[in-house]
Image (cartoon, rainbow, N blue to C red; front, side, top):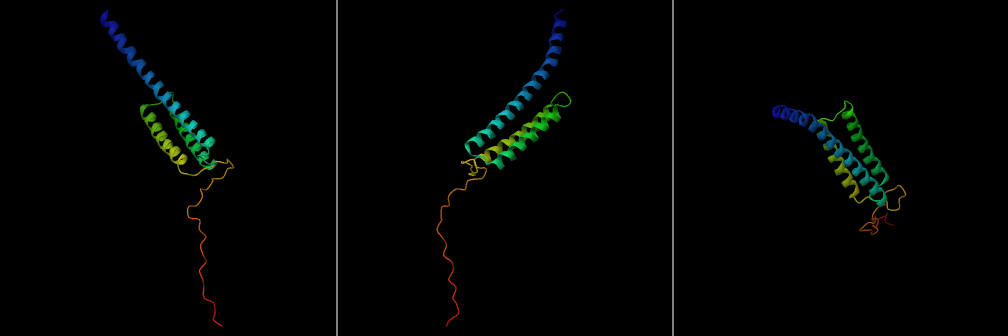
Length: 134
């Protein structure tokens, strides 16, 4: 009886654990997608992202979402597919950080990047050209 119970426990664990692993990887992917989307929206609100930058980042997020949907089409995301999606999320995360910290701003939210004031805004003198002598 103990032998049958041990076999049953091992079989149940073998069937149940992959399902738990699948759930945790998809949950992690979904949570990260949501977090990255929040970072983009926060960048828009704060003016750290211009509309063009935000649109480019949103398209990157949509590309990752399509990858996830294709991977899930057969009913489950394999560990290899999950690793590929997470690598793509790593790349997009770095892009979000770079765009938010590149000093291009849209603080007045007019859809155009605000340019920082020039540090050396001295007017340049036009070169003096000698004219014909009289």
